Amino acid sequence: MNIQERIKKYFSKKSKMGIASDFLFVAILIAFLIPQSRLQLGAMVNRIKMVFVEPSVKETDKMVTLSTSDYDMIFQDLAGNNIEISELKGKVIFLNLWATWCPPCVAEMPSIQQLYDKYKDNNNVAFLIVTNEKPEPVQKFMEKRGFTFPVYLNKFKMPDPFYTESIPTTFLISKSGKIIIRETGASDWSGKKMLEIMDGLIQEK
Image 1 (cartoon, rainbow, N blue to C red):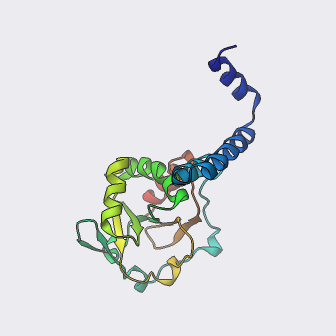
Image 2 (tube, rainbow, N blue to C red; image 1 turned 45 degrees about the horizontal axis):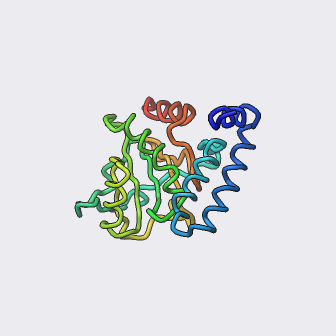
């Protein structure tokens, strides 16, 4: 039996959970042996976990509605231009807090890119991918991986509804200012469920 046949046989007999467990074990083993590979391996492990994780909409009575002052945030793009978030009020806002050194952040970036590609030309949607890092490493990260979604630098304290001690944390905000989704950890942002949520929010008056 050749290698291709062995691999095919392995996948035919294993459940998704079993395959994920095997890959997780191998990734941990390699991470101990090759420390510099930990970011990539960490991202790979989180991508496997993302197979089982989809963003979930908050129950209506637990949704936070942003106040006018909560929109008073100013971010800066990589070219040094400021963007006032109050100007985006009335749009569906996808706000993601991340860092280049964070494995789960790196893991979910391809799905964020896919989501951005689908809605980037829709005037009802705004993407805010926000980091506290300096522009140089962020620019290198974006160029190396070919990501084109807009990245912003945060220079100020975030309003209370966006406070978090963990990254990645992602917020999906409706046109009326409700935080529909608050998700901590890597998630699949380009799956069918997410697209249905986005399309529903875009159609809201």
